[in-house]
Image 1 (tube, rainbow, N blue to C red):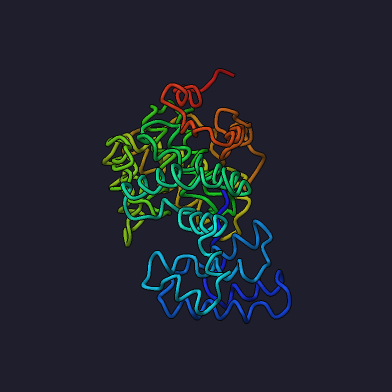
Image 2 (image 1 turned 90 degrees about the vertical axis):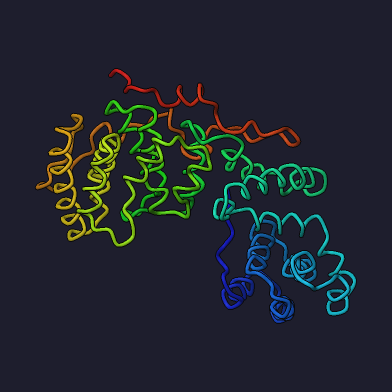
Length: 371
């Protein structure tokens, strides 16, 4: 799923636009920006312009002007007559064109998970699927692939996130474009933690907690939203235990974590992956040594609380990073990356939504496969 949010201000937008557009075009667009600012325009106007230029190669002044003004008549006292008076009949007509309406809608929903309530997210998801995707199919097929990918990414909103299939879709969305301190996509870490939890004998609920363990600490999601999404209560409790709270010391966090015994295995899996040779090798010497000390302390505390953990092959804390173990590097087809292997929907057909519970169980078995 593509996200357009690189232009936060007109200064940023104009620098990029000047490379794409004919000479002398950006000053005319600046007029539209000032007009929108006068009426209290919201920042998504830059996202619409970015989408039109970068995704569809739009360089025509009238269409881009309409994109910058698309939201004014819906959300502010500005009327189409005001727009027509300032920019002419053609621009006013383009504001209501399918191309601009669809670009505006995509800019509005591309980060749907950041909306404050799950109820509003679900309402907007269903409205977009019912009204705007058919509009794209009928009038602007160039938007079909863009909305199809978005529809699949947010399909977890169609049912409770109480199984691994839906949870994988959720973490792919909330960790989109996020990277961990080692420079790797954050979502890959969450998947690895869930795999290791499974291989350590974890229950499906613990595997769910492994997938979701960084969602509250590192993204916009809250524990209350996890509840509203239908995540089982015991899984939410584990995520709460695994989440380091603001101004909470690492020691206090671990002391609180061990009060939720089911979360201990997930934390061990988290540490195991953080201590993998590949991840340590991407850190500088100081960060690598700090990580080893921190995790040695954590493992000792977890051992005191619950006894020794699973027999994962942990790197020697005193040795430099070495070759990866098979568990670090072996591909696992049951844990697809993002939407890999998911066929794009045929235009006009309903999206099937996330895998149901039975399918999810086949994606991630409760026990590790035999060698």
